[in-house]
Structure formats: structure tokens, C-alpha cells
Length: 321
Ligand code: ADP
Ligand code: MG
Image (cartoon, rainbow, N blue to C red; front, side):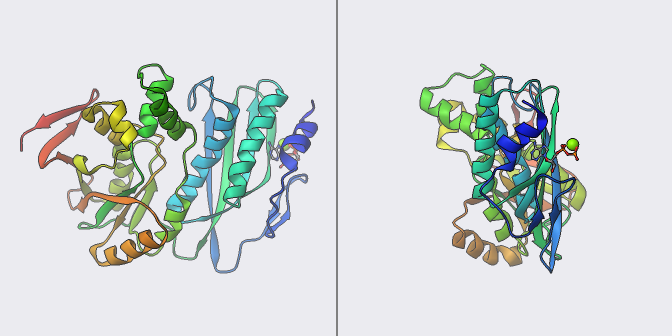
């Protein structure tokens, strides 16, 4: 199968056609239109087999995850998805694999009204790169740099499930089948928090999506906002499945430092808290307050039931305050 035939059969035929795509797949470039009063948010992510996903990951999961991580970046900016490009490097042409991959990709893209408008197809190791574009009303992008001392810190959903899912796929964690299904699905099929992202426009003072773990991603906000944070580890939202799968210290460790959750981490000032509560309730979004921003520059302080906690390589250490 030639490159042209692969594109034609698996990627050019999509039911979803947006009106703002003037020219889609098939020419040298795609041509699109950004609505008046909106600006374009653009993000690129690459997933490499053996690095970002295990070698035996199903094609459906690879496609879903590749697009979901880009959608999560759009969500973190408060953007509404519009278009994406796909650069696909594959060792060989496996039609069954491509069929599953493209079906899963289009299932997710249709759900979020994001249209594939171009890409590149080459032979090489299995690498999936997606560049996604979305719209944000002018001046409303949610940035990492706006957090202020006193702001409350929130996360959507639950944390640590994907970390446990990874341990299961790597064979270092054994759990019952129903827990395994839930946790591995959280790793392979992350749900980008787009509704939350747009609901947070003009409410959140800063926002980031959690891809590398809460502690690391919160540090990006602290660096770019030049402030510190206090997090109550006992307030971290944990799923019932995670609490059943591992002991509580391990659950906290996954929640703080394992990656791939793709939840949103955001800050909001005391004055905007009322607006936040209304926006979350209206959009039926679960978000948990886990701490607050401090003036201690770039310092992350953790507590567990009011005792100081420290993150170490192997877990936590208790320190009596
Ligand atoms: P060119 O050589 O001009 O870059 P290509 O032959 O690589 O063009 O691609 C032809 C068309 O198919 C272009 O519109 C390109 O964007 C699109 N395309 C190529 N690969 C993919 C892919 N994996 N997914 C979506 N569109 C693709
Ligand atoms: Mg090309």
C-alpha cells in the first residue's frame, strides 16, 4: 500500500466536516478560518512507542491518547478544539492496525468537533505526532503565570489512577480484574477536560493540565507565577478504585508524582470563588480544593493532616511539625 492510498483510505474519508475548513486533506496545505474576535491556540505532542506508551498498547489506545493529550493542552488554555494535524511514522503498513487506529481517532475527534486537516505519513519507528488548534476569545487564554498568594488551588477529577494503570501494565502491581480495567483505561483513554477549560475562562487565575504529575506541573505554575503553594495531601481526590488497589501512602505518591492523569490544575482568587462554584455546578464538573498559593517563591509545601510531608524517591517521609 502506497502513502497516497493509506491517506485516502484511512485518513481522508471522515464524516466530520467543519465549515471553517476551506481546504482540508489533499492539497499542499490546509486552509482554515479563525472566527472574528478569537485567537488561535496551537499545541504539538509526540508519542513514541516504548517511551510514551508500552510496545503492546492497542492501536485504539495509541490514537485516543495521542489526540487526548493535545486536547488536554487546549483544555488547559481554555480553548475550544477546531483542527488537528497528524504526523504518523510506522515500521510497516498493517491495515488492521490502521483501521483500528483511524476509527478510534475519528471517534474522539468527532466527539469534540475537531477535524483532521492534514499531516504526513512516513516509514520508521512507531511515532505519532499531533498538532492541535483551538479558538480562545481574545484576552481569555488561561495561562500558567497568573496565580497570586491567597488563591485557592483546585484539581478536576481524581489523581493517580493512570500511575496505578502504568504499574499494572508494567507488571509491578497486581489487582483484581475490575480494578485493572478501570485503572488501565484511565492510563490509555484519558478524558480531556475541555468543558472545564472553557468554564474556567475569566475565573481561573492560572491553569495547567497534569501530564507529568501534580507536583511537577504545579511547579510550572509556581515558577511562572513566582509564588509558592501549600497542598494538603489528605485532600487529594482519589478514586475508589485506586484506594482499593494500593495502600494510602502509595495512592498519595501516585496522585502527587505519577503522570498521565490529564486532569486540570488551576487557581482561583477568593473573590472569584463564587463564580467558580456556579460555573462548576452548571457544567456538572467535579473539582476539589487541595490547597492555596503562598508568597514563598517557588516553594511547594505538603502537609498530611496538618503534619509536614515530604516527597522522596521511594514515597513520603513524615515530619512532625
Ligand atoms: P506533500 O508531499 O505535499 O507534503 P503528502 O503527499 O505528504 O503531501 O500529503 C498529501 C496530503 O495528505 C496533504 O494534504 C497532507 O496534509 C495529507 N496527509 C498526509 N499524511 C496524513 C495523515 N497521516 N493524516 C492526515 N492527512 C495526511
Ligand atoms: Mg509530505
